[in-house]
Length: 627
Image (cartoon, rainbow, N blue to C red):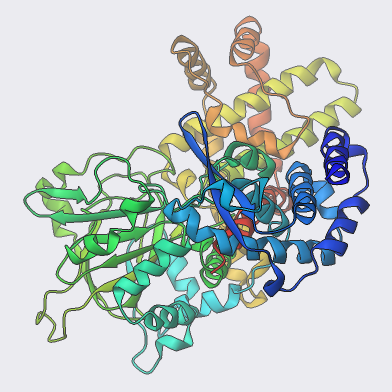
């Protein structure tokens, strides 16, 4: 006992100085104590622990305390590692420990779901390991299995956009962010021949809807939210370590909803719901409610591969996948607009869709509040432009962001087919601010501005350098102002997809380069110094941060320091003529000198930073779901 405690004390007191230690100690722990078959994993159960208003579960074992103390040491050290230290653990030993911890996780996950705990005296040894500690170690050991190329890029492209007469080029030119498109599965094609076949077969293997829902509710854990501009996964882990591995959460992971014509959209669960309530989803489904699950890419590896392939196809950091299971003769969500484009992939059954024209001239931006749709019924031009689509198994419907839409399952006999439930996946292509065309222009002015500033410094024009730097900052504000009103700036930049399209698709690069040149012409003709100055003055009066929307630019250069808007305004006011002259010079030279091909590299570096963090998060969540 004394020896065990001495070992534990030695390692726990070393954690504060862990940056100075080599990882040979943990490698040896793993090699000697965790190379055991699954049959040798000790019996484990949970003991409840109350801390304030929170309940935690500690792992108890029917096992001698010595190996459990060593396990506790390993878990503690893993959870205190930096990313650099994690990468130094040998790949083989990391796999051994991960397999051991995953087996433990599989044994306790059901108890976590139902909140089952046992009296501590029934356990031979109660460890200091909480279930959240175990979940964090599994997440950390799994997240470094990242790849720089997608696993299913070409398969996704062919499955969605090369069916029948449809092609990716035709889709981009005629429909992308403009109008809906139904992509019908050719009559001769089998649903088992595309990227969704694995999930379709999995669904059919569950035989009944209750068994399918039961599997989801009893085997999946919550995909806790991560900030969209978070590029350090350790920040997410610090914020979420007390909740990691918890059961599915209502509103965050799942919704249970139906729409009645006289009432509107109603939820089966009112207010907050616990894990026991959520197990009633089968009851809700039988009562006509649609079961909606967010983040399917965090729960199923096959769907994660589809999501990743789609993200590479559109040059984005990631895409999301939601699932909707609707009983016969029902409507789930009421008519609504999305701030992202969706591809509706019909996996099972039939569903009738209505898609309306975007009531606004502008595309909605991600995370912006969408306008109220109550008055849409009264807009004759909107109703007249409604398009209806009937989706059968294997069909795909594209809906641009901003287009109101609604869907319902078919009433029996309406299509001379038996009424049955519908299950579809929506692939959400979310265009985040850095990857709109406005974002691409921000990247362009940032890197052109650095080169411009460097050339002034080299030529000895130090007196002008501050003025030119100020002018570049003002150009960022000017680009934001024009981006708020010009529709093209809100559209997605697909530049990040270049390296994954075949050489026969040079039309794509030509299309993107033409768009960029058109934006430069608008910047040259429409940007006005007085408008920029007025916007800064107004922001100061309202105590607003005008640069908040493009604060992500700091990810381009770690040495870049934020500019205080009041300091900028003070400089502009007191040297207005000089600043205005520098601004007009920067605008003119930027629009005439910036080279599209020179910006692609820098843009892709930023894109890869976002992708890397998303991949780490996705890999960690998949490991916790163990599906």
